[in-house]
Image (cartoon, rainbow over all chains, first blue to last red; front, top):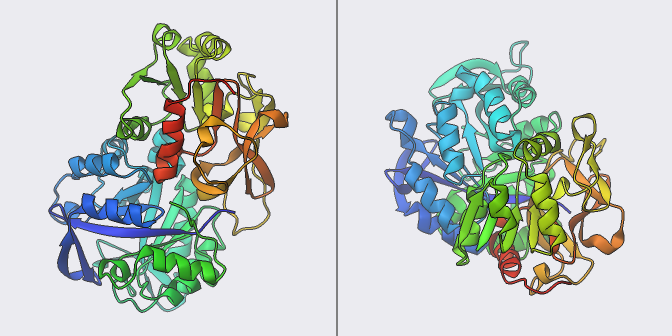
Length: 259
Length: 207
């Protein structure tokens, strides 16, 4: 049986992993390569790195870091944040990442999804989205609007419509990152995750808000997510991946047990 | 020395890094001559069967591949590198493949919206036959898969591992004598995947 994936998220700034709440008040947590090895050895199923300063400061992506991670861990990992064009995608994938994640760029230039999928395969192209809850309306039938640039800019796009469109363009996976829930450890955005999971044919990854075992159980059962991204709950040392996997297994969720 | 065939079907970085991490020297080549002299061959690949076959033809690699397999050079197909070893694939309206393993490659079918195609993620492999590539690997260990089509192997003597997904119980690992082929990505499957690659690197007796 295909197992549900647990994916630690490492936000990287100047080659250090950081974590904030709702994209603010970031504190340094450690070295990204060392943390990647520790989580991989600890049983995570995949990793995602966001080079969070890359786009804000218009710096190029830290390709050398991608290379070091690829040498050190042999599980899939995605890189997002600061991908500006096809050439950036190529560099990141050739450095050894399994996937690239595009978010703001895809909203501004949806064709990048189609081009990336054609050149590298859909499995390499992840669409990240940062929806916020809004009043349901003709314009926003799902009741969620896509924002970009870390919540700073609203786009007028309905979250479900955007998810379907990205699938049509060739995205291989969708990460639903709830801005409202990010870093709060108050639970995932279950409703939108389920809505998208039930309406697209590609895997849906829930992100933002995971803080307890029950949050993860809920996002896999009620939210129908294929994978969940977690950060605070493991970065703080409060939980280990093994503890999380033991609880999920006990709750009847299919989880990879041997690593 | 591990020789990886580069036939422009995807990114070889992770395969190369995985072998290097277990202390193997790696050569990446699309030269028929180098393939014919190789000690051990890895045939990876992602993407579509037809593009892979077209590329093998245009690089004149089909005959060298047949020859090294016939000569018993240890050979490991991965993902599309496994699929094109079968007789044909349903992909791209039907693609004739190498016919080295018996059977064909089919598309997953499902009416369940929550069962996604492609299969992306970790799934268990039931070891159905003792084989050197699985030495020291526990039965039902999970490996990392990314695929929409699966090998339907028509001779169970060639099936060494099976996996269930969507409408299928399929041959996630197959082989004969010195040939092994896996649908999953051992290079992305953590320590257990590296163990399989190490087994392949040390494989010197037929089975």
